Length: 267
Length: 304
Image (cartoon, rainbow over all chains, first blue to last red; front, top):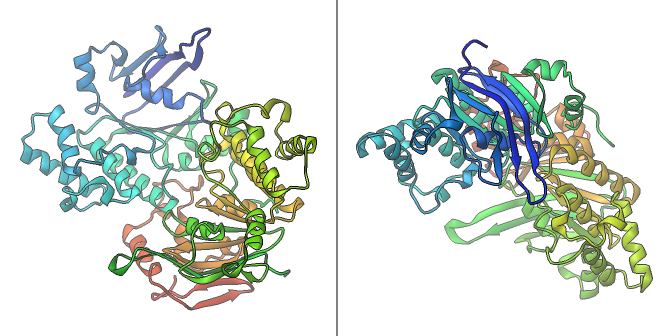
């Protein structure tokens, strides 16, 4: 890849324990090109969320990123950023949609105010401009802008998830990290949301790091996929290849743990 | 077919009153038979869990009745109710919240034995607990003295299954038993439920939003939307030949690695989705049989 947007090199993360350390991420390297959707798949505890948190430096002790690790975004090492630079970097360059993001909205604050929080702390927008931008973002995710004065509980789970995504997009980030963004939603809503994200990235050209344990969904959405096992990246390939010709035994096993809609039954 | 063990007959449940009434289920009917599984699928809020709770007698139906071996449970006396509580057991979605964190696994399995199987006494209880754990493929020597937090999600769900089996049940209601588990252990739990169903001739009500797992474990399927069962029949037939627009929508949204999102075939058009949702939400009492045992509700607009 000539000019990757994100380049993770030899990332090693330990959880420091009293007696011994636990290596959660073991010498992982991968690149994400501009406009690309890269997927990380694996079972729980394999380190995929730890990587997601490390990229926006949201990891907390006892997690420790080992010294030889590098996380380069447009050539700049995220791990070297000063606190001020880090504050400017989050949301503007890398935004994150968390697992069960629909519960990450503030329940006692109106949707419009939550947009303002993000916009006002990162830009010099006036209140009117911020309102304009918030309305524009809501239209992108198919929610009527006149609902900016509503509270989170007045929306369904799928709508709340779309609002979180809209807030993420409000500052035109270059990379959006999505950690199991649709796991709590039913399949129809899940498809609607991911389809919309796919359209948006075609329009705006941002990259996505997509994390899920649903391999079928991942192949549909991602351009390239990395398979993780116990902290290591064991296979990395184009999405079609992961599906058609999985190389690693673990990838094959992962595929066989999904009941297929048209496959055999147990009966 | 043999006599149904548990039947929901035209069961309606509403919450609230006046203009804010919510119809959680509308005239839902289905039967559970020994050794067979019925999958109840639908999106969140479609009324699946309300059906489960009515089957567990946690909610009283607003209208309609629930029959246990042909007898209405609304008229049952207290000894019948005790028997019903023994015979109908539930496995919950959240394996972390459904075990008491302050008690050992041994306690969790001893309680149902003492309450519902008085014939097992003294030292036999410990042996019975060991047998239960072996049935769900856990090693009693390792697991018995442990507390729930010392077990993984999959192990906890196995303990929950053992707890349900302790009372020698006839019906198991499993509400999304695998949705909080990791993919790598999900299949193991499904295989275990399937084995229990076959070996102990259990009637299984399997509630899920994952239609692919329904295919894997259940002979019959019922698709719910907005409190109504919109289509029901043999699982294979419903999946291969869906009639109702909502069933088709649900099936088309199941992740399929063969079709990428950029492919026009994968496209869900939001206007069509809205139309299907609006059309399917209208109460409709008539259903047509399209092939043997495969029914679908009529829709104001023509399917297709």
